[in-house]
Image 1: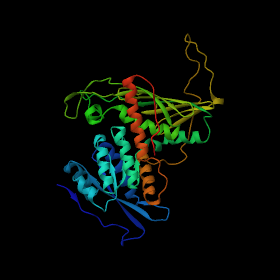
Image 2: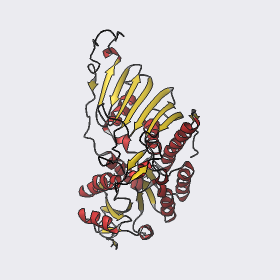
Image 3: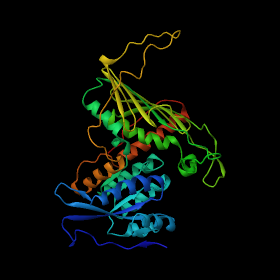
Image 4: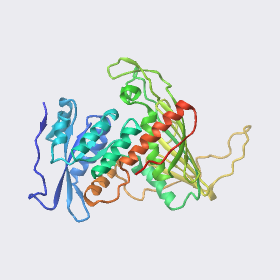
Length: 398
């Protein structure tokens, strides 16, 4: 059973100070779709009375929740006081009153759903990867461009406080010439036999679009491109460290995709970046993601929220001597970058920017082309692993 009663369109006679934004939200019963996009983004914007535009008009999101399981999606809608939900995606896309299609469902189905939504004249905002191969990801971008619609791709890590502080330091010239970036990401994902796994089983199945290279190299592409410099070449080694896991029904299965990736990137400006991404590592660092940036005038270590710096004048002079205990506490001499503002949820921050883009035509570079670039790097990473060599990253035509 489904339910999709339509609310009146605010702004067409009801109130000229508000505009209704009908959003088809597909895949909101999943972890990311529900927690980050629905609860912490769209519902928060609604609770605030909508998003105010430059002219004082407020945009009020009006989501219809879409999911394959009518019981689950209906329960989710009722839990949050929403009365628009359906298990009929085609009918939702066909409704002309809802002009934005959002997708956070499976990667393998994404490209075909985006094609369908673009054909229906919808604007697009979606999770990444935008497809499981570059050909489809780029075709989606070209189709959206030809249709003249607005489109955006979630690139949430750019709005994390730690990354924003790094960008501030770069723009302020703190580092001098940046030499290298070292990223450590990941944690131990239980195999599901003794303890329940924290990630769904599809993450470890090739037939369902799994693999950490496809997942995380899409992230590292936009983090590197937008923060440090465009990625020019990649060398990647993947691994399937734990080949047997147990799924949500306690059934064993073979993991046939990579659960760890060790990738090196050459960036413009002769910057070298190396990222270790793993679901098979135990954390002994400040956060689940840390970035260590070295420059001629200073260094920084950033996590998801915090960032610490050490300038050239505060840099100690270590002397290598393995025969005596260390004489320097290397954690000393680092200064924490303060929070200059109260940081909002990273997903909500990008949602608000995209809504401004929809109504005010403000710049929004995180589009389907940026999404295709992420898929391109993941595909090249897999090819590099297969062939055991460095690969150049060609420019994609705009």
